[in-house]
Amino acid sequence: RNRPFDLVIVDMTTPVRTAAETIIALKRSGPVRVLALSDGLAAGPEYYLVLARHVGADAVTSRPCSMSTLTRRIERLLDEPPPPMPDGLDEERLEAMLDMADRLDDAVMIARLMLAQARKARGEGAYSTH
View 1 (cartoon, one colour):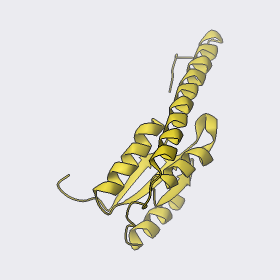
View 2: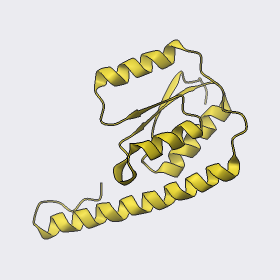
View 3: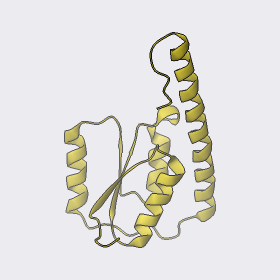
View 4: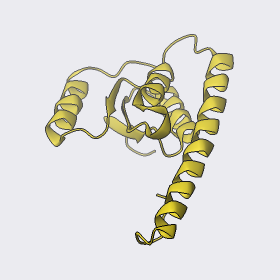
């Protein structure tokens, strides 16, 4: 990157492994603040947000949230110096969490497909997986 970022917002649910790996890469590349968002989908936002904190997110927020809540969270983050990547990241535990996230991603995709098929069967509109 040519110019450092002050803040990066990461969506933890699209897909989770990539989001977690993005946070790790950002924190290892230098001081940057990371705000992780999650609606949780099938697993609930808590799982995704705990994972985000474990891999280095500086703050987490469940979606949906109001614009004023998001703005306040961003302002608070920008008022503080960005903390570095946590020391002693347990790579084995992290890999286990990422493997679980992969399984959750698969389960969510299957649930979305099943919901889309049910909606299509009821004639409720376009077939969509998102």
